[in-house]
Image (tube, rainbow, N blue to C red):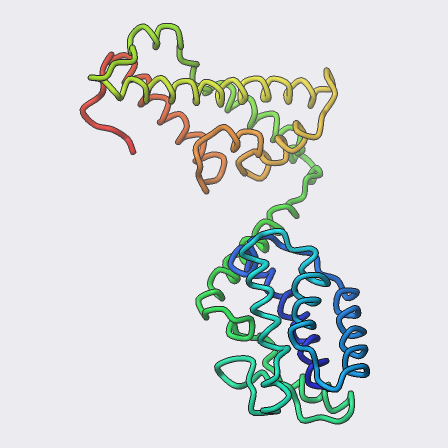
Length: 304
């Protein structure tokens, strides 16, 4: 039953490579191992040698629910892996032989081969870059995959920026980071007086937007407090006055490559902009809420 063995191998490749499609491939990226495939191969050999008929249901259950499925925790992924395995381990694979196709294009199927070398030669005829149909996905999945690859490439290129000093007369990375921190620190908007906000914008049924402005002022206060304290600590650490922690070091590297620091992103508005543009956006947003605060009522125009 070489076709079933080939089906298990093909299934192993499919469940591994679906991870590159992110949440479209699996809700959770599972770490399937060659040992999972080896156990399935041994069980296949055992059942074929001991039974006159191949127990397809048993093989599917052991493969999808135990050997591979033991790692799967998401309920939708459990259903998916059972469906995928059933495509490769079924009676039609053996009965229809080469007429049974794994995909709609007909490119992928079990080979008519007698030796391992013939199987290898058959596999080499597959496209070098398989289309999403090989994984049971729509062709538009390639767009998501290409975007993720491009993003990883850009992040990798950005992380390769030389953090050491340049030639003679060039500023060191520490000087650049300290200047950037000082520039942001000087332009940092002042925090909102929450006690006064509570008095100016009481919670009223007739003025539901009062609740909105108070929540936003609190939200931006948390961001401004985090930015102010982290910038102050970073400038001290870079001068050797306090210990440079991992978070502060990550903050400095992000400022050096003009990237939003992780500790600020968690409390700030969602944005894909670089740090310089993101900070200008934060200033503009704070100015808007200060205008709202000074006005004492909901403005005629909102910045959505």
